[in-house]
Image (tube, rainbow, N blue to C red; front, side):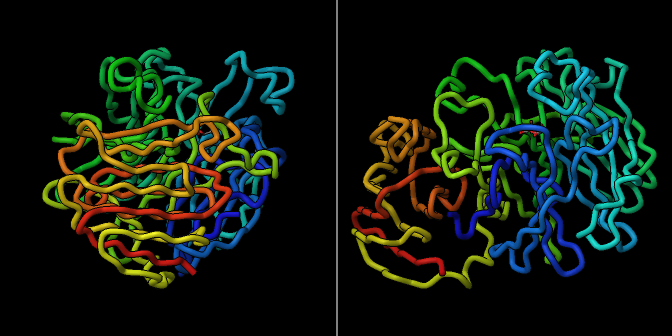
Length: 450
Ligand code: FRU
């Protein structure tokens, strides 16, 4: 059972959707299949929170109910307009005899449209007759793909509405589509962003500024060869944009949001006090390498803890949101070495590490260390019945590790390296909650999260 990480009450969860602060509450929706702990015909689950730490289940918000979304309500986003909450999402329609059984629909005969629904209070979405298709299936291949165009992220800048969608060029090259609108209902295609030889599908896009930097985030499928061989099957990261996404632009290299095993499809929003916070599915689609034993107890997957994205010395970094501070209870603050047992939910920090001399062992099987110019997260045992449930090693090349922050819940760990310049997320399934940390001369603190 996870404590501070959002998980589905039962069954299946994937992407975060519709992350928004609305009428005094944080709302977070998620891709869910409410009938089995596996992916299926997608619905939107819904949780709300006053502090981004404790979440309350609200039940199903969106479910397939019209031709355009009869095979699933895929990912999307939320926006407030005139005091109402508007959700934008992708409706999927399998063109088969039985469109409700997505297991019969692996033959790729489907189309995708972008839909919208408005709620007076952000809780009730039962006016299903008011679902509107705002961007019908795109049949012009020069614009987008009729099947793989999805995950509308909508925002407003002044009077102009913007939408970015994930897509592909002929199932060969990932692409993002930008639309604008003056009312949130009539949308005009403006521009697309792509890069050659960089994956076949770009999905779950997001666009925002951190200081002066314009970031275009997307999850990419189909990166192979070279460095990608040591990484996950799919990636989530961002490009920095120079120029104008609606005109002339230049994309930087692609930076990963996370180097761990379980991280995909993050979505962000801006808080009232101007922080850019994102949250991600702590899972990985189409992954054969490892699995999750929670399936046996009827659920699968959770989210990462919400992270603030910020800039430090010109670098984009991430840290757990500060709302966590109030939940922390200091257990020990020592130099050089720490051992503890019986804390399933905690934060551990190691600061002032010198010469990369540190080693952390979590639950006897998950190791964080430094070797051959790499920060590494690895499991001692890759067996599917072990703590790793099949996970092996992830790493990043870095000259110097100066500090680490480890945030753990019952079955998940996030490690922030060098003030969050690199982050590693993984699920793990411990039999014992044991902590061992060694770092000559460094300061080590352990706080339990209550
Ligand atoms: C990403 C994704 C999205 C899609 C959703 C369907 O994990 O494939 O592109 O909207 O999952 O559940």
